[in-house]
Image 1 (cartoon, helix red, strand yellow):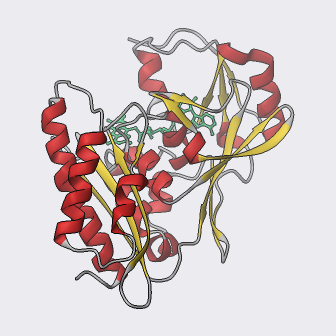
Image 2 (cartoon, rainbow, N blue to C red):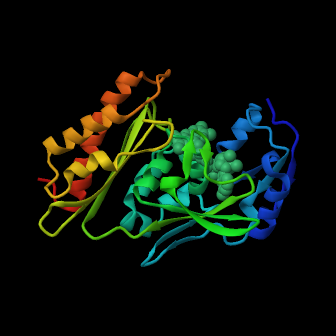
Image 3 (spheres, rainbow, N blue to C red):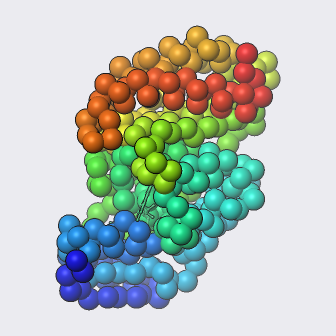
Length: 291
Ligand SMILES: Cc1cc2nc3c(=O)[nH]c(=O)nc-3n(C[C@H](O)[C@H](O)[C@H](O)COP(=O)(O)OP(=O)(O)OC[C@H]3O[C@@H](n4cnc5c(N)ncnc54)[C@H](O)[C@@H]3O)c2cc1C
């Protein structure tokens, strides 16, 4: 099937894009890489009357790593971010998670910010970026605002962006020293969305004790499941098998995964418990202090 008819807009500036979204509201959609939106349009699940293509807006493809952190513009491709040496060195969780998204051809077009705006709770990047404490910079007719990812995902396919706003960029803070991270997932086939996925970030003190931990699970709830409360049981001690397994069990109990053709909720809870344990241990090892 082909998509329903729509008017195509290719603004050259952010202000122009924001004005188009304000003018057309619910009838408009932003186009970034098109790797989620276009298939939905072809199946007529999405039928926008106006498509606002961001790809000709100058500067939105920026990828800038500095002492303060990382800035990923709205049209920076997943592949560009995945292969960037500064990302690999300082935000390896992001590179590791992107490598599990679909296939290289799709990552050549798909954008990191588009994946966050798509807000699929089973997708890799919303969970990874939340674990890295990202913030979305949004632009609308009234100017710009910052939305921490902790407040960004509001339901499957739903975000805190209004229909007249676009996401300009994702900002990730610089991780503290002695930080390790891991993305682990189980997928039926390579390139599929995960049955369950886990992003873990562990920071250690000079004596190898856990002083900061972030844990987010994909496909465990209607939004990326922030499990920092369960993970905080690890604070103040070395991360070991027993502690990590206890967090895995607590996360499995707290999760509310779906039952679908890829796996039952019971199976997904079991998978989450295992992935959480392994991801925490791997992140601690990469931080330099697994006991
Ligand atoms: C075969 C296949 C396999 C895939 N496998 C995976 C997978 O394993 N894991 C995974 O996570 N994804 C997967 N995807 C989805 C893919 O990674 C998409 O690239 C990603 O979900 C969306 O990014 P995009 O840039 O293509 O966004 P688009 O498709 O252009 O947009 C997606 C949605 O976000 C909105 N949007 C995009 N950018 C903005 C913005 N800047 N401001 C406001 N709204 C915006 C759009 O309006 C639309 O509603 C797969 C896709 C295909 C076709």
